[in-house]
Length: 326
Ligand code: PMV
Image 1: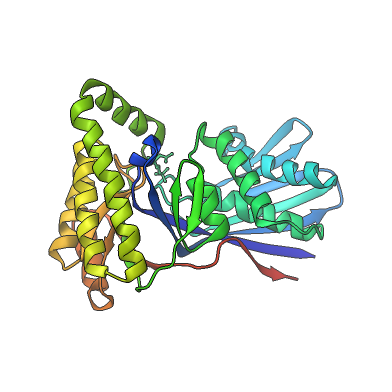
Image 2: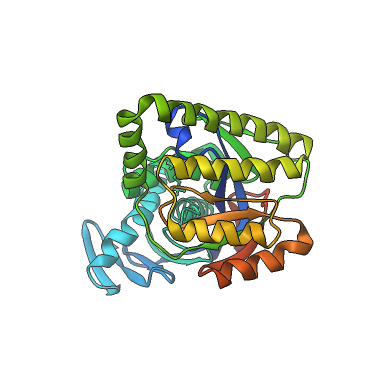
């Protein structure tokens, strides 16, 4: 028996960084997914193979034997193994396993790939053992895995990849949003890896150095997310584009943009996007552009010409799910 589960990628539409200071952030699951296949083994080993990270190996008790990717492989695969062990622990099972990860989500780009892999792994493994797992349990497991991988995550990623759709997130509370218009995005990737922790620290330093300047920017960021929530609910697509543009400028002002991000954002706007901004931590990673359907292709081409890679994405209402049982 073999189970395949999947979970979606995400983009932060509004409010990254300001969310760290208690303001709301709006996040949306998109139609690019990470797939995880699980099947039992006759021995006690846990074999994890990540096709995208080009890392694989066997875990047996505390021992790890790499198969591909050398000793680095352990660090990359450890969060997946932690998810498996957590499922075993919660449901008092233990068995040898083979887990294969095939993710269509770019890695380390702020699109939630590690959380999606964690959630899909939890669902695939529990289904393989006939365990009825609730979504809140998957969220908790994915959150713990994120802690292992990134230290102190806000919880946005595990929530959105588990539940899907569009959510507003504030002070660890999340709520689903009703969206009354079609949200079509072009996602531009600078290809530049960055550290979320370092960028969060950069904003903190600026805030400390210039509190009377940076605090109002954070307030304005919160206002943008509140206004964007109403625009999503009322289907005010043009307003959303304008708010994205303002949000990008604020992120730039607190020091988390990058010249390539700015270039991709400008190219998208010039090609007819309704609005464009960096998404996630910034400093590299990805930007998003909101556009009408007929403009998407042109915006994607402009982003590529400006030095990024690009793909078109739309909202995915479904979070983590089973793809196949065979
Ligand atoms: O790039 P990502 O998806 O890791 O987003 C980081 C979002 C921040 O607001 C910058 C940090 C956080 O933990 O919310």
